[in-house]
Image 1: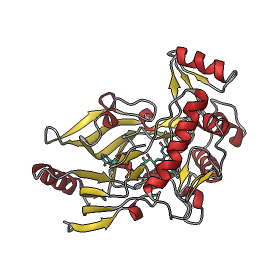
Image 2: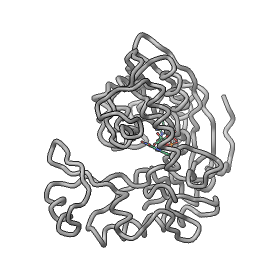
Image 3: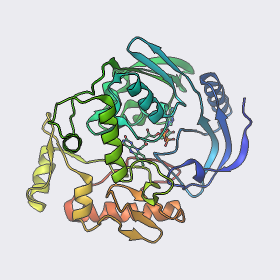
Image 4: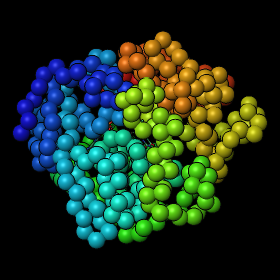
Amino acid sequence: MTERVAGVRLAPYTTLGLGGAARAFVEAGSAEEIVELVAEADRAGEPVLVLGGGSNLVVSDEGFDGLVVRVASQGVEIDGDRVTAQAGEDWDSLVERVGAEGRSGVECLSGIPGLVGSTPIQNVGAYGQDVSQTIIAVRVYDRRSGEVRDLTARECGFAYRHSAFKEELGRHVVLAVTYELAGDALSGPIAYRELAVRLGVALGDRVPLARARAAVLELRAGKGMVLDAADPDTRSAGSFFTNPILTGGQAAELELRAPGFPRWDMPDGAVKVPAAWLIENAGFPKGYRRGPARISTKHTLAMTNPEMSASTEELLDLAREVRDGVFEKFGVTLVNEPVMVGTRL
Ligand SMILES: Cc1cc2nc3c(=O)[nH]c(=O)nc-3n(C[C@H](O)[C@H](O)[C@H](O)COP(=O)(O)OP(=O)(O)OC[C@H]3O[C@@H](n4cnc5c(N)ncnc54)[C@H](O)[C@@H]3O)c2cc1C
């Protein structure tokens, strides 16, 4: 087992490049090691932070006063349409591999940073797909009961960028995820207008898997949403705010303040509003700067640390300014998508 190391700075382990030191840091190379390390820390009453690729984390300047367990378990098993990957597998490498093998269902999730084990946490999604459409089981270590369990997709409580794991963050440690990916040379029906336009097809059409992946990667790169050390706009945690979901009543109120605002009407009567539209129309254009922190020059939803010189608080000051400005103008409260460690928006 890898050794515990004291005082490791967490900034280099996050895509934002932010965060102070961990009291202790250890890398876990197998599911058994993850369970052993977490269980031991729990018995000792030591706080635990499970770390994947650090692409959805905002860690405080003070760091983490406990044990950081970095997930590094590897392995992919295939049984018919079922693909089971260990939590430490790189997500995009898995997407690329299953696409090349002619398995359909996650091609629109190409280029999303991070590890397999994190995908169920916020029900990772993009361009009309999310992992709730293909996950059939999640193997977890339940820190409350001390048991390893296989949860069904239903038990995961998936919703838009949300899951039961987020409700009780930290209780379940994901050890492996099983996806059901149909053997098919074509993508699922294209469900996202911008992607359909890029592909030159109609919504609902299907295209070869490799074409879908290439188009998604192109679109994402154009928005600074594929990690690239040479592109300062990618020093982010992806979308910082989720798209607000309003009740019918709240939507009617917003209509008074912003007649004709862009909206997606949902089957249950709720209304999803693009957070990027709210932010831009509250006076925060792409590239808007507050000290060393900046809104991405390519994507309004990404708060970035372009020169890697900001502190966590400086980045959060920018995010707070945006959140408060949107509330003042539209009466809508933006909620952060990344997980906050030792700090809050
Ligand atoms: C440039 C960029 C683009 C992005 N685009 C998208 C996008 O299109 N769609 C999208 O949904 N997200 C996107 N994201 C966000 C991010 O990539 C995803 O949320 C990803 O799943 C996070 O994975 P990670 O391994 O980096 O998780 P981390 O950031 O390491 O962790 C995130 C949370 O999950 C917990 N966690 C991690 N591993 C485990 C585990 N094994 N068991 C239990 N808990 C665990 C952590 O404790 C933390 O609470 C983007 C991020 C960046 C930087």
